Length: 224
Image 1 (spheres, rainbow, N blue to C red):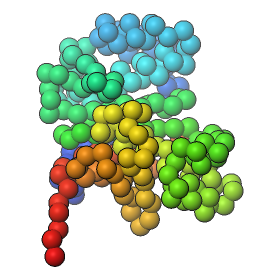
Image 2: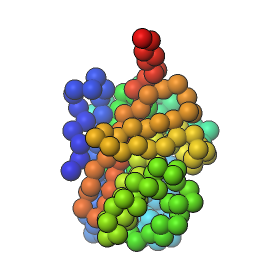
Image 3: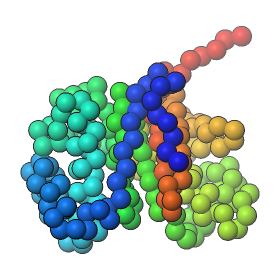
Image 4: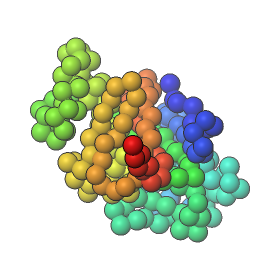
């Protein structure tokens, strides 16, 4: 279930999703394709595999849908990339967005604060990867689950970590020892990358797991 992301937190966040199966029809594909920017069409055309073309088109469709709420369209808005590849709108610095896709699902989030999202298809995984790359407490969280539930627990941690790295704009360049995910009654990101506080939400989407992270601003120091 996708979390409700409007109201209650003081931040605007709107999530969009698309299953690329609707793009398998050639007329539907072309109809969406022709509405997008030349830059996006070139990116779609650069892929050889049909699956990748549909995912790239799906990303463009969701960006266009999100911009529509601001009276804008993807075809007329410049999209640039930050130092580590995170896309942004240089002419509209108050509109933040992020996109993620996996297998046949694409999600996008638009917000008025820095934000990141990730979605992953829940597949079998060698848990030695988690032992090697995850923090000890994250690996222990996975192994606390029953064996048949560990893959899903892995992807829960993974999508939250990915969404956080995308929210801070560093992508995979952020050292793994700079932060870790703590899952209890609520999800917390314990991090030493900056002096900012981040909110997190995650959810199951059929055979996928997805997560969202957003910047809540400067950490508040409480003195007793």
